[in-house]
View 1 (cartoon, rainbow, N blue to C red):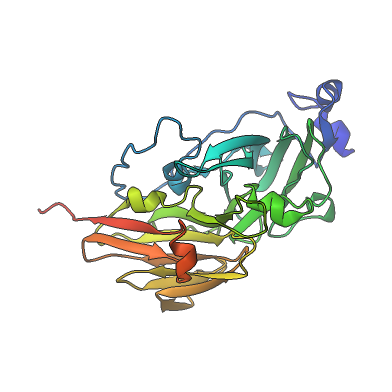
View 2 (cartoon, rainbow, N blue to C red; view 1 turned 30 degrees about the vertical axis):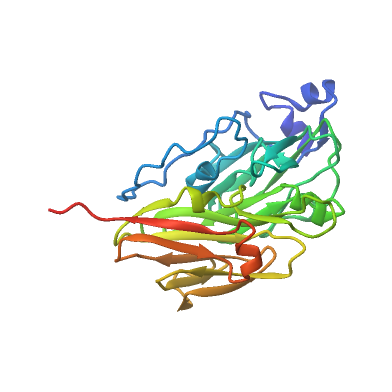
Length: 336
């Protein structure tokens, strides 16, 4: 059966999408399409998550605290005995305020920078329905393994749809981004996100967070003037991330800074264990600074025994001082 005939069985059939003039391409589609179910907690985790402060200004268009612990597990169905996770994303053009004096026009997914953090288990079938309504040709290229026709290097024209479908493999921390030239411009304007594939045997419970480093070329001169964790410069300096004393923290860290060839990530007053690209079940080494090229990513694990506020940042000080710094606020455990 052809891909198109399979897609005809969907609740939103290919015929309907063609009628609207939206379809750019289709992967191997199957059962009915439904909207994503968002922010599902990782099952079985007996973890204390301290309350997040309500710190977003009224005119904010990016919420770094939403990005921090927001894992999108998709709409889950069973097809031919397999778990299928379906995600819907829409490319948009949206201005955001980076600080009081600087606005920046982003190309983004679902109105946020970074885009959603997709999450699955190794062996799941992934189906991403990509709507391009951003005014330019875009695409989604996923890291990991997949067939050539799902590689996301072909343009998806404005007001059309592409369906990417592939198996979630191998387990690890991956990413996705637009792959339309000039790629640096499309990525630096916000078309990127994280894609986590969990191993078949779950990792131990932890307070899991996403930290994505990125830069903003606000002058369009191929140089970054501002930098950020999870979308907004200096946000976690002004609004520290609360974590619990003596509790395992698992950071999924990704460097998406364009124009700067390499950055580091440093954690104050502690050491962390490193799982390179999330491809190991045991840590490879322990340190307090790692070096990352663009698109490089790792899992970092640590606990804080001491309470109080502790910084994290790249050790390229010009980058850190231009917005890429944050603070963990370690909350003491309640006394018995």
